[in-house]
Length: 113
Image 1 (cartoon, rainbow, N blue to C red):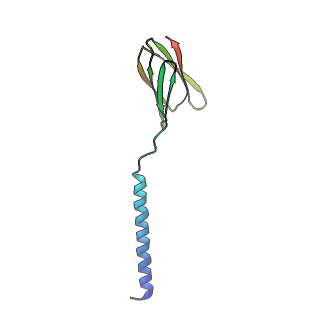
Image 2 (tube, one colour; image 1 turned 45 degrees about the horizontal axis):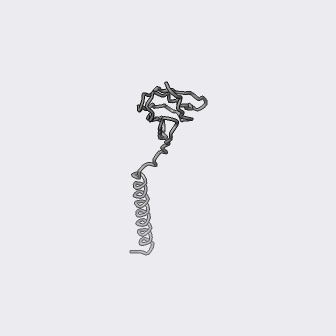
Image 3 (cartoon, rainbow, N blue to C red; image 1 turned 180 degrees about the horizontal axis):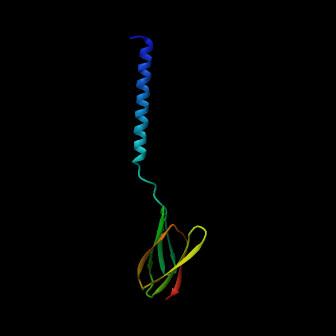
């Protein structure tokens, strides 16, 4: 076998091996677990609350830890405007609310209902 043919063959094998390695590495990256979203937790008066950062929506979960009916105030942003949502939650009650394309600005205890 001529020397130039042998070099070409080695180069071809090296190129095929490199391409296969990159493809396998790419497959490994594709099967990795997605990055976890941040979860926000807190307490506002009688309420314990939490929400996780979502791609298209945010769901806020809450629990009234007091023995009386309370109002929960959630202020959220829709890009250029801010809106509010109020929930009346019974004693020791729990609940949740899904907000589409929103980000949470604040959560406060609105007092007795």
